[in-house]
Image (cartoon, rainbow, N blue to C red; front, top):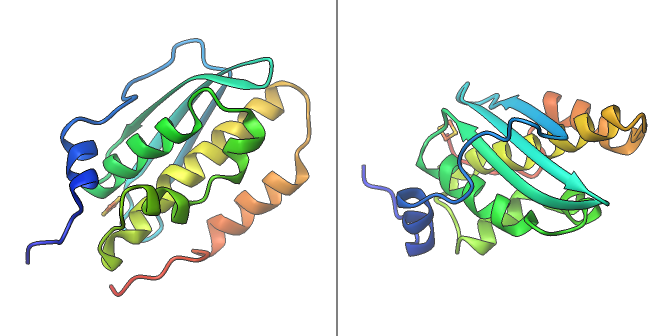
Length: 149
Ligand code: FES
């Protein structure tokens, strides 16, 4: 069955932004999707609390690629505090929506960014308990994810 993807999703899927690896990243996060088993890896380069560069690699589907492309665009050049607040719902809205059965794919980008930020804080010797608790909680449940599969 053909999915009803927005023009923005098709654009970001066909020409994804920020794909690749940052060799000297300050934070790296890797997460798997509980629903489909697909994997996402996120790399952050951070200077003075600002995200200078961000890249991703994924084995996920077209929706995972499009949401990661948009999510990385949204946090590029922003303070880490802004990236911490990014939600998959905001990314989906920026893409003009996703088919309901594909919303779970958008969670990969949000969780990979948060995992990379947790790694960044750990390397800095900072314990961000709120972030760690959120990640542990996300690993057990799919918060705010509504789909029909
Ligand atoms: Fe796995 Fe979309 S089906 S990320």
